[in-house]
Image 1 (cartoon, rainbow, N blue to C red):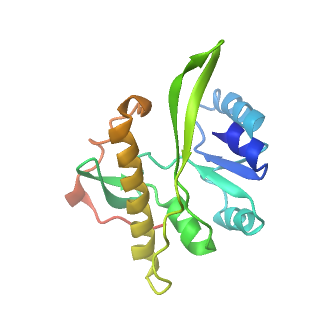
Image 2: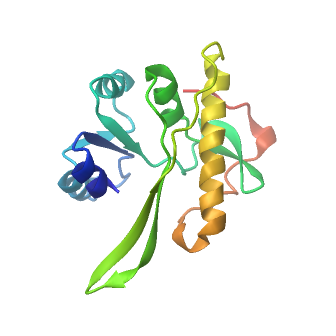
Length: 177
């Protein structure tokens, strides 16, 4: 996805979570930087990300992960905690929140082929919507689109973690970034 976006736009920064293993992290960082020279870790300064958006740089964010500090949304018939960073950045900056999905369609002459689907931007909530509610609505709308993609292409969603066992809805009230 980063390769495609870099070829099409040229102004994209990928956001990723640093690996916990300090021996593997430099290799992952080099690999990502080979796709996109502008890499930002999820722990980096939010103001810097907002500046990037203001300067016309797009941010590529994988948002289907569990996040203990995320907002509660419905996903695949269950309540989950979802990262709210993409929604917060879109709400705060006025940038479009555009879901993108990718599915493998086959191979041809030793090359793997993919279909990339760029969805229409998620409509922002009304300007007078309080921050917490606006971020939750944007995040829920993103997850609803992700859910439809997974239902139509379950073979294209690969998740290594126990996504649905990490959260008990009654355990806490979610916070918004």
